[in-house]
Image (tube, rainbow, N blue to C red; front, side, top):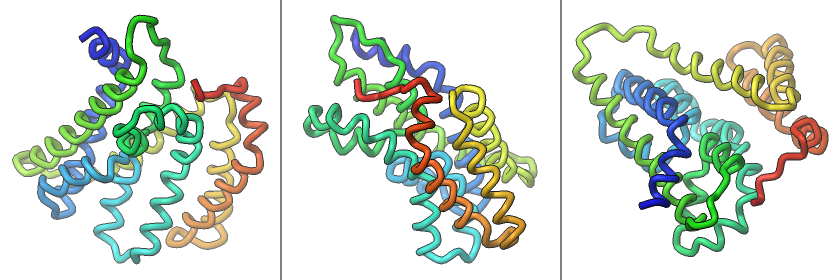
Length: 233
């Protein structure tokens, strides 16, 4: 129980984020015409807050499957870099290895990078409990959001803005907390340039591509500006 209580303590700052964003997604997917079962399944198998919110817009538009696949790759490409530092650590967890890879999120990544493990607890169990509790909370929030969408009596027109608000908050938080502003600047500049060049319907894919290339080319400089932080503990 000591290990479990320690894991709970580490994720307390994340609870409200998971809860409210999950509810927003549930309400959005209900408004798009999908039942609470789909919200539950999305929470279980997709488990990607930003991608799930974008997915609602994609489901209600005529976006092709290959474009959905490309969008998914670019939006979640950051998880590739997250996972590199934890591959060896997760491999040692046996049957839990695939689940730990699936449940790596922005929030669990930040917790694992800052956590200080006491000497008398099992570190692997703490990592697993953090992943499991966050995942269960996300599934619960998505499902509750969809159920609330069914019973809420008032007009929810405008709830789509929650997606925009979510990404603005993520961007501001990234700017405040990260030592390097190169990722934010690369994304902002490339978005503006390609929006002007290609328009609102087709600017996103080239903007994401250029941003990813810039970050890969400047990876060493970004690491230095962030104090050489490594997460391979």
